[in-house]
Image 1 (cartoon, rainbow, N blue to C red):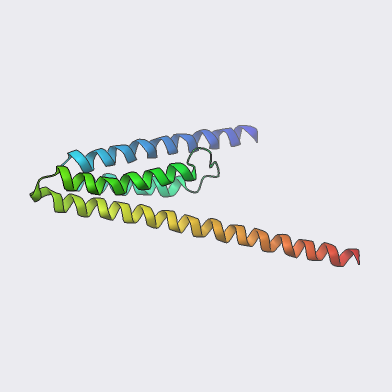
Image 2 (image 1 turned 30 degrees about the horizontal axis):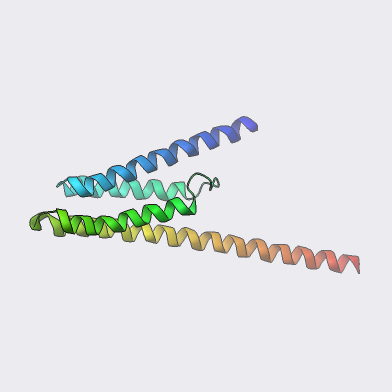
Length: 138
């Protein structure tokens, strides 16, 4: 049992590290690459890995603070692209970055809703259990 838990933690840590490396690589490609196909593919893979990582229970690795920083970085890239890219490439890359940022934000909102729902269900279950215990005592 303990070995299974440790293997799951090690696997989740590996997945989170892979996501973080892919995220930084995607940001770099948005700034430096002109290959929109590669940028879109890397962005999609990064978003898929982010989505998977958000289901892990170990919040100490992919903390709310880190998620906020990642979202902030992706939004700041828009300004950087506008200042440094040539006009011919700029619009396509800006669109790709905007799509990436909106998708990342959408995943964050979705997981926030899931966590809120779980918290409400747990609170509701706790109240029901408390009411049942009170009824039995009377």
